[in-house]
Structures are given as C-alpha cells and as structure tokens.
Length: 150
Image 1 (cartoon, rainbow, N blue to C red):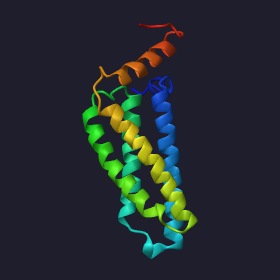
Image 2: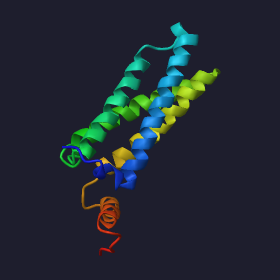
Image 3: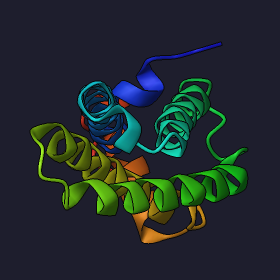
C-alpha cells in the first residue's frame, strides 16, 4: 500500500525526488535533441544510462512510498552506485560538447549525479547515524503537530 505521506512529510525525499525527476527530464530532452541533430555521434549506450536512471528513481520512489526503504537499503545503494557511474561518465562526455543540446544533457546528468551521491550517502549509512536521526526527527515533528522530541 502506497502512502504519499512517506515522501511528502520528509524534506529529503521531496527535494531529491524533485531534483531527480527534473534532472532526468532535462537529460532526456537534451539527449533527444542531441540525437536528432547529431545522430551518428550520439553513443547508443548512453540511452541505457538514461533508462537505467529512470528505473532506479522509480525503484526508490516505490520503496519510499511503500515504506520499505530500509528493507531494500543495501541493494538500492549498490544500484544507485552503478547509476552514479553512468551519470558522471555521461556528464563528462557531454559537458565538453559544443552544442546547446549537449550542454542541456550535461546539465541534467550533473543534477542526477548530485542526487545519486546524496542517495548513496543516505542509503549507505546505518539507521543510527545522525543523518537518519535528523531526517526522522523532522518527519516526526511534522506528523505530530510540530512537537519537539529529544
């Protein structure tokens, strides 16, 4: 059962999901235009990176909305690490391009790389880390009428 409250009451997930989806959309549109204008010069393997990033983003959204993020934490950190390799490599390829479409795709890949590294830090740490406590404290405060917890 999905609960939007799992994501909407947590500023970390709201920000990273918003950035991931907008970064993916920027990358996708920039890649389409780059492929249209420079078809043979656009490596076909980069499309796999675009699709893989969308699948990983959807998997994390699914895990958060179904309240199973901690159950899948270890496998997701490995999958996001692979996505980080794709996004940083592809960003490096496009950032040196001279066309506006390459710049657009590079910008999207850079946004996705930042989000991936945030997810790696969050998913790669245990639940008793201060980062997790801080995020859970904010969620608890929002769900319980801004009550202060110790």
